[in-house]
Image 1 (tube, rainbow, N blue to C red):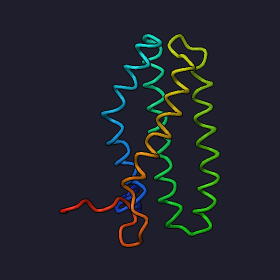
Image 2: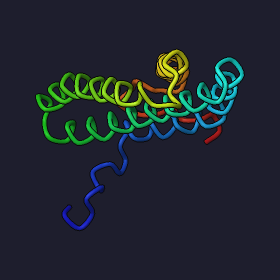
Image 3: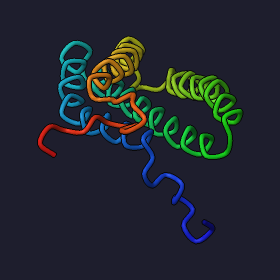
Length: 144
């Protein structure tokens, strides 16, 4: 395991789901950035792009943390779930506070993008997630 530090994520349902979420976000992200750019100008577009990046990094950190903790113990999984949520939300708040005074950051599109992207991707992904032990990640596609 030392030779391959990321080997614990191979076959991870969490990482499979997050990868699918990122794949679904890619075509929608330019539309959201463009929409914010039309309403708030270049600062809105930059803020929206930053918000999308924050959300995708949040999901990736979640997948990595839960994959690691789930392989340690159920207790570690519960601790990582709650503690990880609190830490990740603090990181998002910290990132927003850090850019608040910059020339390019506009809070309305940034916060709106973070909210819409988080909820939108989570709701969209629920259509594709399997909650069975036979397929713990994404549902198998028909014909595959």
